[in-house]
Image: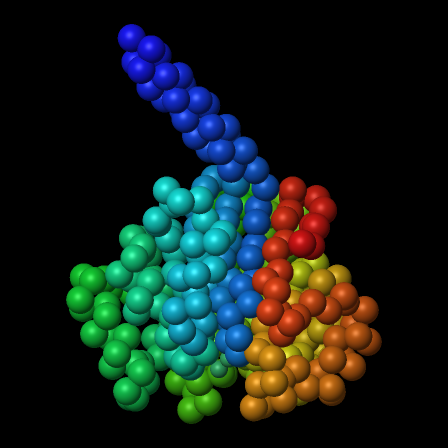
Length: 275
Ligand SMILES: [Zn+2]
Ligand SMILES: [Zn+2]
């Protein structure tokens, strides 16, 4: 009888803990910029419980970060976005497909003719998945407060970076711009399209390269927080001094994953906190 009581008590306590974790899980918008080395990998968790993954970094470090960030029962990625087909943005994905249920994969119409892309195509076939091609202007509405829009989805440039998908996410009065590896020429095109680019947070283009983050673009975005994802001692010398100077002139606080710490932003729709 005593044993039965103990088991019963353990179940009650267990359910209590589970309920508490589930309950505290629902909250604000959370954006995680993973310290993934040289590359991009960004996990957005919406208050509705959706998981949006923008890029997957160069390797399986992505799975480590997801394991650390998501609750243990969460194995679903609602949207997986590949900004462009450079290794540092999507080589973490083939392994991800084996471990997580991915509902939607969003890409540009760019179809490179290289070995990495063939690996990715094989991973898609093995997991029975088919990406959806998105176009500039396409909007995804999650709730009255939360939506995100594709601002640029070019696919026919020789430079893969110029084919970067650019996204802007809005939650309440807070906006976030994700620039992929877009170079200044792409920024100019984006400016000519007339979208509202203003955003408190800018995921800085191309790991802080001097060939991105032009002054015109930064004036239009007018960010308060600039996040750079770059690897320690990377061979490209990212972030470049020239870009850092322009970002500083734009008066944004610069955060970099280079020291090995991921950056977490939390928005309640009015204010954004950095962790
Ligand atoms: Zn890159
Ligand atoms: Zn790139």
